[in-house]
Length: 303
Image 1 (cartoon, rainbow, N blue to C red):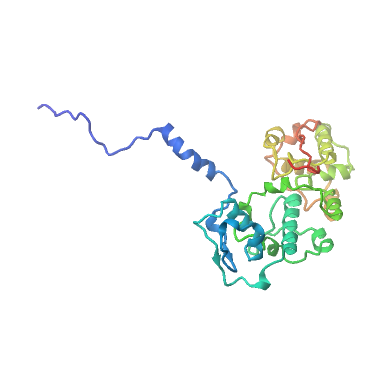
Image 2: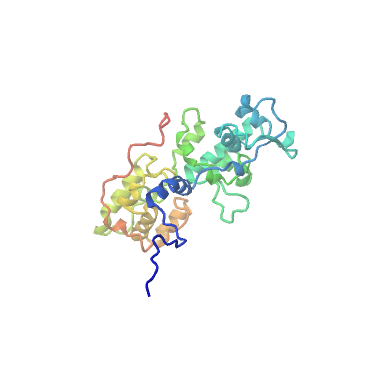
């Protein structure tokens, strides 16, 4: 019996064109790969009164009418979108609106956290809040709970607000007390600090001398954006591995438990380093600093 030949059978299956689909999805992949980026749906556009003309609205107007600073920046950056218009928020009262001076102090508080701890202050619901620097609490008089300072600036998750803005703030014009405090250290260098301040009481093993020399050099070099965790050059991972975990292992290898306890007591270290068994690149570190780069943090011009 002869079979009927189906010239073009319909299997109900679609085969995609990989190149064409990649062109469609590329923008989605790029957007989805980023940790930062604030959705307009996440900000509050509430103000105490509506303006006569949105086109003439500036940052000063928004702040004095109750909009939070970071929310206002996002809204203005988006071009005052009609999709997310300003609305009257009856919960905003005259007494709840912060003055520009109060807002400035909140911004400085957040900036200090980013520069020295490479993170935004924790929210009220965060169970693992970082320690607040004594400088902020006693010298600057900023002794309110840390969440109050960041929540005064935005209604969304602050980590979505790209912290790299911190890199472009000029140091000219800052208070002398602040500049002096920044000179004591910024994020990314704490685990190198012991090698500059403490000479190991026991002889350093021969196979670790180059690594210790490198750590001392790193600790003594003016801090750079290549090292700061928020702006760290990805090439460092290739050259030295995870810098902090390797430095922690090196500390454990050349200092005694008593010496490390002394460092913690003196607040040179936040805590004794953990044993990171999978981070062993320090065993083959060379002595030359090839990672600091040429991007000093403490310079007067913006990058």
